[in-house]
Length: 92
Image (cartoon, rainbow, N blue to C red; front, side, top):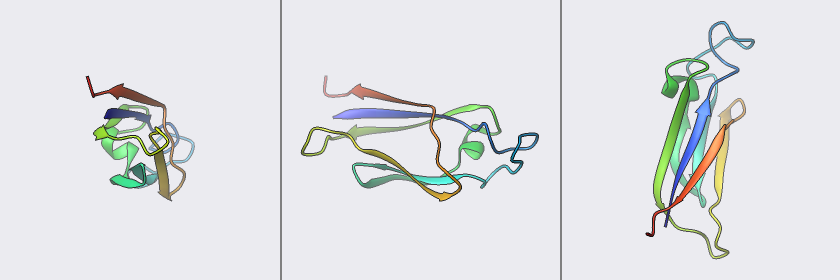
């Protein structure tokens, strides 16, 4: 089993940024091996502003039959974006 931490920061949407907007400007679902882990993730809202970091973590994920963890970001408003993916072995 694995733990996954996804790292985000909203650099495009928000007051004073090139695109303007703010809460609700970028929404996407986070899936792990086809299972929804979080619906309508909003980086700006979670980080409480533009240019600030936030994370989302999921634990106990099992690899698929090929031994892979498949992480998908499915956009519902504008494109999804991510800064980094951290995977930790939780079986120890």
